[in-house]
Image (cartoon, rainbow, N blue to C red; front, side, top):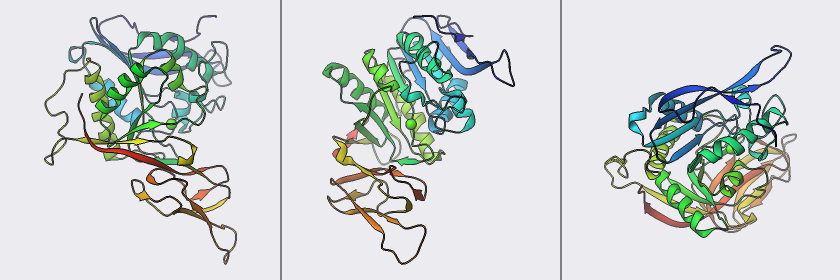
Length: 345
Ligand code: CA
């Protein structure tokens, strides 16, 4: 396969702190010999494990970009053992536009793996991660949130994997991230996911959903920053600090283990209209309980359509905007497997 057109301006094998770019040639109307300049930071201190940390895989999710921008600016080589590669805005054109997909080619980066070196801009980014960055990494963390159209209880997530030993390593890293919730996630369609590419490469992989609505909050950013530290400590790259596991005076920090075992977790809209969620995120629901009503947005006097849950559990995700369209995910109900699991790195 041909080489990637992307050229890094950093040396992945040099010690110290480097802030540079992945330079992706992109010729267009306002820049004939132009390039997309994707920011990247490499912090290295000798031999040791490598962590690859990414945000902005979808361009309208902000906890990852904020936490990783702060980390890139603050982390010193003397703080680490090994190497940290930070790409806060993975699909940079999408991030700059504030949209889930790229404005250049409408590419959804998280559906574009393994990518192509001679494909679209988005496929070129995927290919560079697939063939150049993933082989450098041992531990991979991809920070997502709900974007403009979804909102989540804050969780770190792993997938059920064919290799039980690899899954156990991912679970341990997820618990070290120590979000309020930890999720075994079901992907309805895993083709093209960065997750799948990382897992098939045998890496320790954790992803997250840390909020949503196309913004970030004080709380969701704090969860993210604490989680990234825990992840790096678990990888043996950052020293463990004594405060770990003790977020406040009320005792050790804990996480609640959630599971999404099958498609009955999802409620999908079959109507267009005005959405009334009947539960808030984190609330428990019974099997068959009304989880949402969709009101006719064009007339008064019509009864709303009721949507009932197909399993009991906790509302873990919801459609964010007030209007809903047919095909939108309205709600996700997760099983609560275990509460009060202590966070340890
Ligand atoms: Ca996402």
